[in-house]
View 1 (spheres, rainbow, N blue to C red):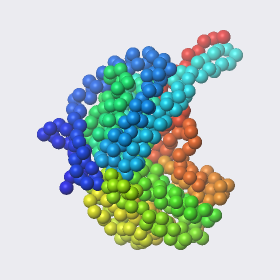
View 2: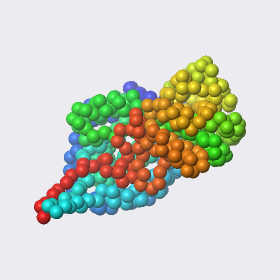
View 3: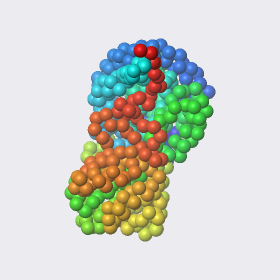
View 4: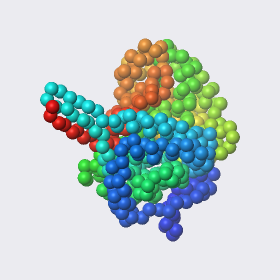
Length: 461
């Protein structure tokens, strides 16, 4: 059984498979590793002219792309669902979301990168956000349009050229997304290279100036070490083991509604999935009962089938990692209150565990699958300690009376914490991780500036 996108060495093509059906979707040509230095050189040459354009001139070239992307949303979203597995409405919605916010993001980047004026009695300084050069972006399969989008739009608008290496699991939709953008760009500003980790490593070791990576902690550590050659700039969004704290004064229905959605959406294959849920003893049993009932309403299946809420794991390898953690937790004493079992094909049944402790690997290692782990707590202090008992620190949330929950949230060691909501912030907020979940960050004015070289020009008064 073929369970993941594969490289066919006979034809030099990367074949993408539908994880729900194991049927081939299409293929793309593999980029030879020895061709990557030449691609980087072409991008570097093109970057010189691109960087000479003003920020506003680059914005005018890029601005119309949002409308064109919206026209292509159904086509690209269908490709996305077929090769990644998420429900069709979510696949199309991912592309539509990128298209709908395109112009707004162009304006946000332009505003964020405007020069700042500083002065004192002796001199006047202008602080500029200039291009870095060539940006190498390595993106994952779980949001195979939105993850490239975060690097491509800001990278180009900041005056860099971009070389995208999408996941080998989802090459088709990333290529389709970039094809739309390239319809509007001069040659060699945006390249796509295809392959597996060999191409990714070659890109990191090439003469790029910035590496933007979203993926596992282990891969991020390797990239950071390799990037020391040449002192390349690095932006890393790494793994997560996001906690949800449910206080005794929480609105249980609201907490359950969010918890179920955030634990199981995209089959748990989300960097900020709710993987650990800490519930105050006073409401634990009622919370679990309602959580099980709400989960039972969800329908798993092929994302192309109407009514399906949850798709498959991306591959048999990813499924095996999830099942290994699940079986080990059960052997260690965890109780299955919903789901369990291995499921058919690449599907993992939506599973809820209780009777957990931090001695179990499933409460420590990132799962990236549809397993919700609920642990009973006796106090706010215990919930905070358990939430922080992890090397990760991407997102978190706290449900309870607002003032009470906000006070608890301020003690959670994560880059983004939501109170009675997910961890995403208001317009302009960065997407930022703490501890081992982030090295640099992106999005919002602060994130946009990380694609730039800060340069000051000072004159005496």
